[in-house]
Image 1 (cartoon, rainbow, N blue to C red):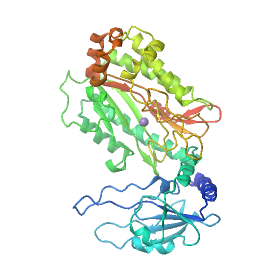
Image 2: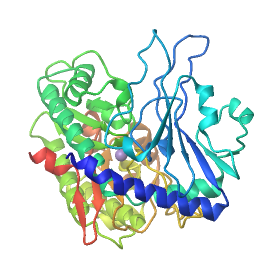
Image 3: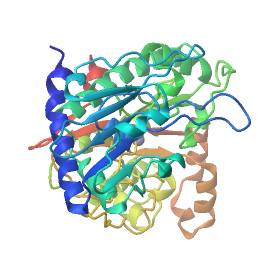
Image 4: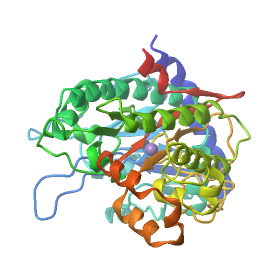
Length: 439
Ligand SMILES: [Mn+2]
């Protein structure tokens, strides 16, 4: 039997238990979880790519619009499965797979037919993207905050099934990363590299967990660089390549970044030093760690690398104190990963949804919690040469600590980021990404 088939029943049990607890704590008798609907482009007759809602994907791997999971504690969950009669588009195939026997499946031919399969008695909560006609169906309690924050809180701890999905998403994604590196080394354009990645991962663009960041040379200084240049760099003008790209397996994402230098030059040295402390940090992950501290530790490493490579004349500790490292490392060290690339509950203090504040001066950190087994998050430090941020540093009192000639000579490389996906175990961690690069 496939491992996912083996693991799925326990996952569904966990999801059901979490719903049982959350519904009873918030006073609901049942819930209708909507997977979402297609959205039409303004004044056009075609939809945007459909993305199922995370609430829905947590239950089962169905990627089909207008579906519902209807659940009443104590009863078998109902899947309302949309299967229209249509000769313009190919309707969804019959439900198939290891999860089908665990649902009471009702096929419906149009969205409205779904109504009669949704819970009617007692207090019914609705989770998902609201549409006006749901009001006519008698639904009204849309996305109540207390229920939502409890369910988000529960998604903190990944089941074995979820971990296996993320692991497989890593395996697929690394295939793409390897193909992309090869394309870069052969002088391909950003667009050609992007196509090589899609082919190797067998993903359509709309199936990616996020838009690929395919950044050659100084484009790597744009943190979420969103274009793909069609033109190749002229020989001698090709310096560096940063790829931040993931994959999706059964709704679960991977999120991986690698950086390459064309030559064995000083930029390669910067990559090596970043990779060294990234691995050291990733290997040190264990329960009890405070991710806020972990983020600040990364800043000290960034400072040490900048000092070692003589970009600055103060050591790591001092560079953090003077906030110099924030110019070179202006994003958070990482974030939760799961059904969403930036998964929910990164700031939760408890199930009520109260939050843990970010450290002062670090507004972009997305994870502030104490680390526990079964969490999955990224560790992704970076060092960049971003014109606008360097401009501010240059005008500041700290400018005197910077070797500007050296900094200027690195602008053409853009920057480096190394990102792995880490599972926290009882005693330490499992790196979900590295083994596939080694294979
Ligand atoms: Mn990331």
